[in-house]
Length: 60
Image 1 (cartoon, rainbow, N blue to C red):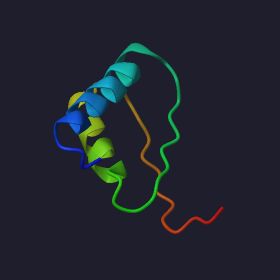
Image 2 (spheres, one colour):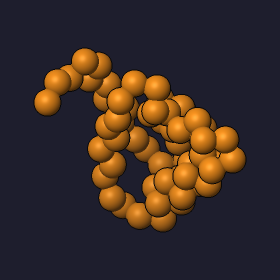
Image 3 (tube, rainbow, N blue to C red):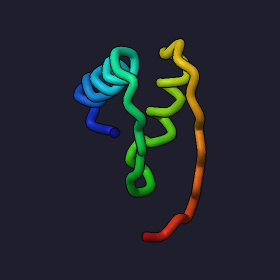
Image 4 (cartoon, rainbow, N blue to C red):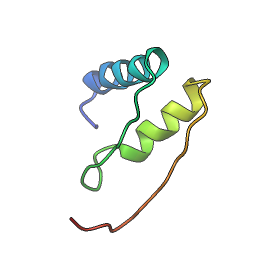
């Protein structure tokens, strides 16, 4: 998620989705795509309870 200005828009859309729905989210992606950054932003911004489960190196 290192697209400069557009990354903030993506973050904001994801945070809005989390705040205004009761849907579960399964976040995956390759290394360096911003998964941890997004999770930290969710933790800082959302008042909802959530579970952060990390499975590093999980292969398909």
